[in-house]
Image 1: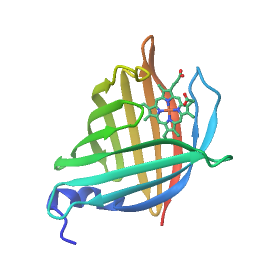
Image 2: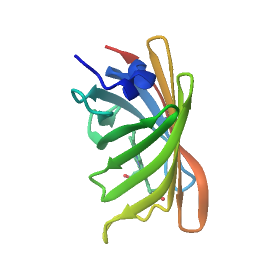
Image 3: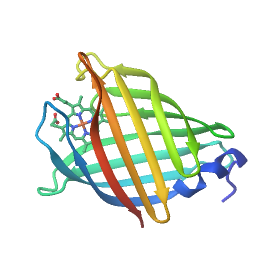
Image 4: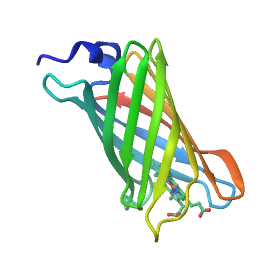
Length: 155
Ligand code: HEM
């Protein structure tokens, strides 16, 4: 497939990734989850389509899922937009250093009935066929605090 030249810098992300993660936050019980994520180029467009689904590692029950777009703006400049069925939408600016991508929200919008999230930070790194990421989030009265850490492998 012809991918947009600005996408070359994140080509290493393209594909289907499967693995396992751990979740935590000061207010909840820690949990373990299984995850499947895909990053697919849109022909000729400077973005990747992103889709992710998770389930409880012990019971198999569906947990979080999300979908969005990773936009390549120019050399080393990225944007990420993600929507979640919990009613949260994240808009990030970010960049990359080799195969390490980092994003910080410029806006987090929550639907009227969503649990309020005020900030999100995401780091992703691909080393060979392993994608690892960590995510921190802030809620009212609590600054950015780790929520997720996962390792996925290319399938
Ligand atoms: C792999 C992705 C994720 C998984 C598997 C996951 C799973 C969970 C689980 C099991 C809980 C505790 C029970 C519950 O309230 O449902 C939780 C709480 C929470 N999650 Fe996530 N989550 C994920 C991603 C996210 C993201 C991307 C956000 C926000 C941007 C988020 C925000 C929250 C919040 C605000 C809470 C509530 C904390 C509290 O009750 O004090 N989560 N998550």
